[in-house]
Structure formats: structure tokens, C-alpha cells
Image (cartoon, rainbow, N blue to C red; front, side, top):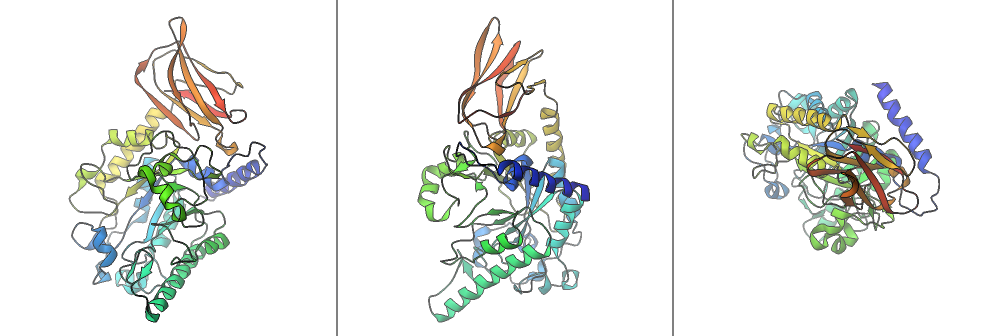
Length: 460
């Protein structure tokens, strides 16, 4: 286990050193943690909160404004965070993120600044700490740990969209207390659980000059290598514009400003989140896209939190494979939402589908028919069987350089164009409408910013 984390640290240092050299192309470049994020390709968001124990369907609108009458409903008698992480890992997740707080405001750890936490309930005699258990399970099984902190809504403290009700002196004092409490929670989370891969602020953390807590300096001080998402000042990755687990093509990893929402909301939200979905080909900031979806998002479902008797909402394997191709294969990192039940376990039907998914990805992409070996500027492959898919990758540590490319196949006695595109980035996957029979296949870079740096070109 120590060797795993040592290798991650060494790779971060090597990459950081490699990308520290100035580029005369003036391209946006990823930092070391962003490279790990994109190389991971898949992660899991594990959502857990008091409504799981209410015995009725999760209702987000209600949870944002109506406090839970008794937090002691939280009683997962079979709680097993190891099982959560093994389920996520079986699908191919390299990192996992836990909802420390969500809209109820209840914190899944031993907070000294937020009284509405695990200290306040009878479960495990008031000594439980699910954040601790989660992080330990991540490290036990070689998964990078991340935390999701919801401070935009808090029904317990009467906070909606960062704000308490009223404008009088009492309201101002409550607003000040809430901001300081949120800052204290972030400091606790950043200092008690070792190195974190990422901290995700649900719905953002807002501008500290307005109603938001001043949390960025805390994260920068205590978790300098942590991915930060997101507030009015900084976002290290961006939401991909939907909760479908996909992004449209092209999806550039670059963005025009260092934050993904906030002051530029009119631009970002215009045209059905066009900028979030596609990025900015000439953006000055490296901010790759996140594709997120709940595993239970099928057949009319969209369940980030567990509801009983809804196994029919688990995506079929075919849909999950399409999701993978249209997220990871579109230069985006995929985050799948997992839902522990009121026992404290990922349900059996979910774990089975996750395992099937991981096996299907390995089967489909584990052994290429043929793969390009680094021969500079000659991306030609000999083929001895039918091709169903091609996969391209750039060396993104040096930026996204390719602007336009075509793929040609040697069919009969001539080269025929069989695909074309613009963005490659970390990974581009193209599935042919029908298997392609040819003797050779080649990649031609039509336009690039500087020399193209192709990492791989493979056929499946």
C-alpha cells in the first residue's frame, strides 16, 4: 500500500518537473494533479445523507428547506466503507469522493465547529466518523480520496443559496457565523485525514467578498496538491454541462477563465451550457471537463441517493459502455454516482453491474489489434483483421496541440477517409458504424499548434 502512494507521489513530482519548462507556444498546460485526474479516467461519487433513512423517496427541493426532525434516524447497522470502495474499484474507478455534507447540513464526521454532525447522534455512541472510515478504505485499496462539501444549502441552519434569511443585524451575525463555521469545517477536513486528491464544493462556494466562505486559502495552505472545484476564484476542472455522464464532441480541456461559473454565469450558462460542454479551443486555462451521472439514472430515475425498490433504475451495461465512450472517449473524466443504502452498503444489484462494467471495459480496450509505436510523424498501422474502433491520445502534459486530424484506411488499392475530428486530448474514441476491413490505417494531422505530440494510436 505504501508503495502505491509512493509511486503516485513520484509520478506527480516527475510530471510537475516535466511541465515546469516554459512553452514558447503559449499553450495552457495541466498541473500534476490535473494530469492524474485525466489519467484516472473514472471516479465515483458516493452520496450518503440523512434522507436515505427517511423511508420515502429522496426529495431535493424539500431537503434544501426542511430540516430533518431527528438526526438519529441515521443508523446504518452494516456500515462497510471497504465494500463501497471495492465496488467503485471494480468498475475501474481510480478515485472516490464522499459527500461529507449535503443539503441537510449534517456532517459525516466528528466536527468541533459544526454541532450538527456524527457527535450529535446515538450511532456508534456518537463517536462515528465516516470520513475517517472512507479515507482509510480508499488508502487500503489504492483509491485516491476526495471529499464533497455542500455549503450552498443547509436546511438545519436555514441557509439557502449561501444566504440566511433577513437583512437585520441578527441575520448579519448569523451569516458571519455560518461563513466562519464553513471555513472551520474546511480546515478540519484539510488537516485531519492526510493528503486529499480533491475537494468538491457542491454548487460552488461562492465569492468570499459576497456571501461565500473564504475557503480557497485554507485548501491552498493545507492541501496544496488538492484539486479544487469550484468557486468564484478557481476551478481545476469543470462540470460538463449535464448529469448524463457524457459530453458532446469536441470537448477541449481548456477554458477562457480560471473559474467555471460565478461572475461569468451569463456566458457559461448560455446556449444550454455550450461553453461548459465544449470548452474553449483557445482557452488560457487548463480546466478539463467532468461527466457525471448516477448509476441509478435509467428508466426515469436519477438517483444520487438510495431509494428502496428501484433496482430498475440501474443503467444497463450497454448504456454504461456508451457513457464511457462519450465521456472518457471525448476527453472527459467520468464520475459515476453510487448510493449506499440504509444498511450502509452499496446494494448487491449495483455492485454486480459495476463489476460487469469494469470487466467489459477491460475486454473491449485491454488488447488492441494493432498499436502505433513511436515513429515520428508516421502514424500508419498494418492491420490483419477487421477494426471496430480507433483510440487516439495526445501527450497532454505539453498541452492540446492537435486542432484537426483525419483517419484514412487503405481499402482495395487506395486510401479512403473513414473519420475526421478536431480535439484529441487525453483520449478520443471513435466507433465505426460497421467493422472496417482494410490492410492499413493511418492518422494524418491536418493542423496543430506546434509539433503534434501523439501518445498512442490503436485499433480494437
